[in-house]
Length: 443
Image (cartoon, rainbow, N blue to C red):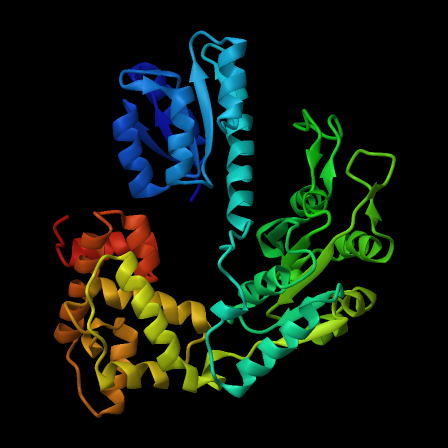
């Protein structure tokens, strides 16, 4: 659900805005000052914050950067009783989405919050790829991975388009970053976007930008990601999700090196290398009429397939060891290793989420383990498979005990942050609340 946090020390205004936005379908959290607002921010990660400028414990304009440090994807709207231009300018410079005056028609606040919510969702679609991703960071000794790395290294120094195929979680964004860092464009920008996170219109404005006045809300010119990535690399993840109508505009950029911004009359020239990725079969999507064949051939001048984890099980021990070392340091825990049963269970798992799922599983196991990773530290579904394969009959009471222990330990690690706990446990927030009540877990 769309979540909004209102921080204001005036009860009447806070309650009025809260009720108004609840009627619009938002989940609304309330705080009377910045310190209590920060606690709610860390616990619930709202997409948008509506914050008074003058609070008992600080100035909202100065607090925007602090909010962004905690939750970069969040959008902040500042609310003041005495609007002034210098404060408004500084608020925007600090990263605020908007700066509005109390007493204005409250109906104006609704569309502003709606636009901020849309922007927050767009922020979630952008991929933040660590700069440390290089070919040296790709782990795996299996022939299929070594072949993929070899092909990527060969194509990196050229300027041709690359299409990375493979299931979700196989490391396509890691390969894209590694190719960029080994290319002649390494000093240019590496810009990444997940095409599946946007509708057609939002994706078009994100990629190509727009001119001020081209549509309602376009108050100033906006650079598109093609322009940002000029002389660098643009990574289009989940390219198979791009709207068919938008594919024609992408094809034109590939063919001519130019495009027209929304609301503009003259073309913009760019020099960008395209790396794209998909977890779908492009040829099947062409047959279904979902993807342009001419665009496919433009994008797949050089194609690299990344194997799923179930086809490279010899790499699971290496990957687990790497993740264990990384996460032990990150979580400030001393873990001495893993039992043979723990590793055997990992090797026998399906791993539909591939490397990403394996890493998440190790993270959760490190959180709940005491000293050495054992079978009991794995998620319940993996323990069930192992115990059933061993012919053990596990009672509902035993399963409930294991599950309660896991949930309690994860909640302890997240300091009661249920949103983060639900992510680690891979269950919905509603399910987590229900299980906390069912197991009578004290926070």
